[in-house]
Amino acid sequence: MALARISITVPKGLVAAADRQARELGRSRSWVVAEALRAYLSGAAGAARAREPALVPYATLPKPGLGEQRLGQLEADLRLSPEERVLAAEDTARAVPGARTRPRYRQVLQFDRFEDFLAWKRHADLAP
Image (cartoon, rainbow, N blue to C red; front, side, top):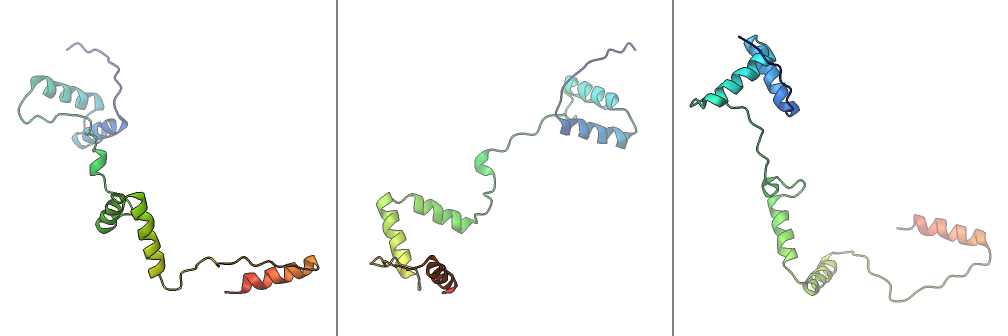
């Protein structure tokens, strides 16, 4: 039988699968590729056909970090108008016990020396 050399480009995963099949059968990679090509061209029913994996649609991929309940809450929140979102955020902030609120006044501090400021700053950083 006369042979011809061809050069093709295929995905690395497909080459690895062909190499595994060749090792299992004790044959060469060329033999496995030739048999796959024969089976494909013959169109024999049940013949194993080599093909690239189908791409998974983005919508079916799992959402990392979000469970079903959190994803449902996020979708419900996104259906709100911007004004409704602000009102809901304000309600949530009021419902949280011990939530920090901004003081209604601004405190003006004066120091005679920079060292006094540093001492106050150290004390303020340590305060809860």
